[in-house]
Length: 231
Length: 227
Image 1: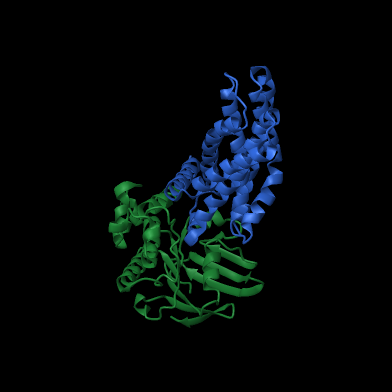
Image 2: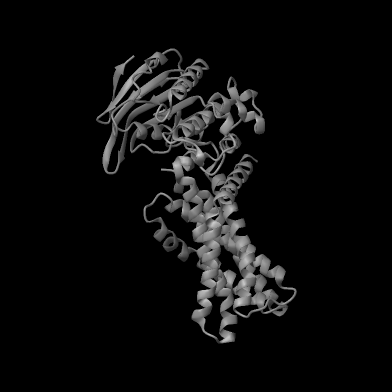
């Protein structure tokens, strides 16, 4: 899955990881070149979320080596985190903050805008968050507490955070789950636009009808190892 | 500078959450007040015994409140994977720890300000004129020490099933020097200006423990929250 550019966004070498005493990842090898869109498939419980959390530095490999943009995830997780963002299944927002406050928090704790990022034309606060909020259709609900949001709205807010920070590597865990048709189209547009901006997108998804996104590769996680599914 | 902004941002978040849920306020206020009242019943009607027990009972009540406040602070963050998302942002772990600590500290201090007159009134103790500043200083440093330890161990136990039981078991042995310093300094402050030098020496000890605990906890917090 490499090619095009020399830089590897993701590099896994014989990565293993146990969860609850059992191996979920057994010697996973993977190379994803920067700027690619890769879809990860697999049945429930096969370890897709584990792999994404490992790439996001939230889980440490039990064996092998994992790199994001050349940064060793075990030794240099902070440098890797500066270049990646994860959209989790639940959205990952604070329920007792408003949608806007959640974005303000992310902006205050993240580094400055990168070249080419949509955040570059946004002020770091106030009206500057309208862009991502409007981009996911949450401008009307921006000042409501997240605990009043539906599951789909929480997912959209997580997407707004990704749009705001626009990391080099987008890790998406079941991004279409809980979204309505409009939300799915929004997700498609954001993923396509991110790839067009040169971002790398690594997406775990059950949705087999998103092939129009034109992924560079589709891989399947089965029995703790990756295999090529289609391209 | 970035770490300072990050810490203030996290502290502001915790304040906003508490302002909206009031979960910690309700739990700690009632718990502390009930502790003071129950201990007053338990100690009997001997006025001298009551007066001498006031500093100890006050700090025990604040220690329990510290456990509740820190545990609640992490519990609110763990909902819907929000704390994990916070840890994915490139802010340093020390800054996140200091932010949560600042919120817990100010909260505990405010609770202490409220509880001191209640404890003094219930136990028949008085603070001599001119020692209120000393009591304030003891309260500042004592609640800081409790918040340092409580925040650290609440982070350590946040993802465990038996966190409610484990947090006090892990935390209380470590806060013994803080409790000792705070109780003795409070006792000395209540004795009047004659014992002010003694109180100040306890305050210095309290400050020393706070500094050591703060440096150690902030330095190793990443072991607590990272896999």
